[in-house]
Image 1 (cartoon, protein in one colour):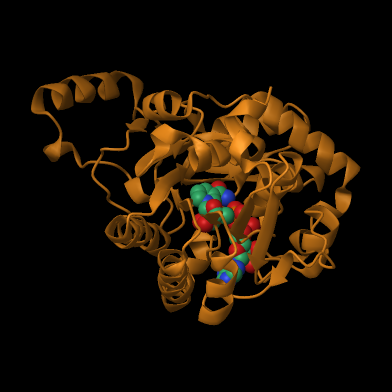
Image 2 (cartoon, rainbow, N blue to C red):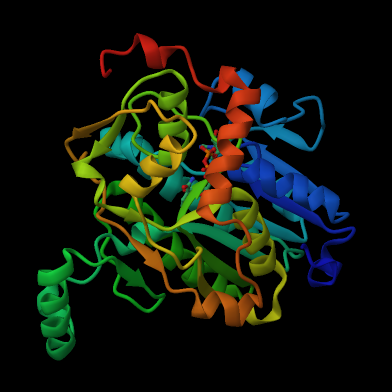
Length: 363
Ligand SMILES: NC(=O)c1ccc[n+]([C@@H]2O[C@H](COP(=O)([O-])OP(=O)(O)OC[C@H]3O[C@@H](n4cnc5c(N)ncnc54)[C@H](O)[C@@H]3O)[C@@H](O)[C@H]2O)c1
């Protein structure tokens, strides 16, 4: 159930959502409309083919508040921030593998672009709060064993010798140890948000999303992100499911509906002022578990062990204590429900399993 009163101040407010036509941005903007706000979506719309934005994400490109533009366009961002009561900065080169292939593109968008947004927000006389969208990738693989509490480390080693590797739980005060260019750009964005907006006294909140999934997420070539979409699309086409590194790595899978809800709570909750908050389910799911859930809907699906790609963390799950305390909220969609919803959507929307999948050599 959505709690309307938590969002009373959004009614009639103008909210600039960068990346507002993307998977998460489009979910946030449609929720904002339900709440009586006026979202302005600023987006290059370059992360997917046009048919994904208009056909699958339902973006109305004729709406004057859908602005096709770049966060690095200083004049444009300043003009839009000047007319906004809130800003959600979600635009990014969000594909981990693409950032690894092209670090300078990641730096250009995720660092230089974020600076443009921060400058515009700092210069506006109107913005009440900005949410900077960060990621669990800032934690990387967590603390190396030698830096952990020695007594606990001994105990953990004993447990791991019996059970195998235990998933890491990340709380917001953990040291940041990104293992990818994508993750380093998010660390920079977080710290620069607090420096720039802290100096001018504009409220901000930093949200660290864990692995976001859910319809209408669609896969991209040469990417290893978005495991539910990958497995469901491959299973629907009769292709084996790739268990990178054997599928032992874990993720905290968080449905895009919950991500949108948590983000809007971070935008409005008084206690989120200048806070950094994990947005996750608090549950670890291994990649193999995801494959099994998908196979529950496609019983003929086969598994294929493949190497772990560069920059793919072993992962972990969110400590959600701060999220629950600050946002007075927990996610609603379980992984089993979310996978089922995705599979049902894919059956209704078979064009979401792209034809290049069957044409690629990686069968
Ligand atoms: N999907 C996840 O699992 C996940 C997890 C953690 C954090 N995030 C973060 O959430 C945010 C949204 O991610 P998403 O999954 O919706 O990705 P997405 O690619 O669907 O959406 C991002 C949008 O930003 C746009 N964009 C890229 N460069 C831009 C620029 N220079 N100016 C304006 N727009 C630009 C893209 O065209 C795209 O439509 C990103 O900041 C991402 O890093 C996502």
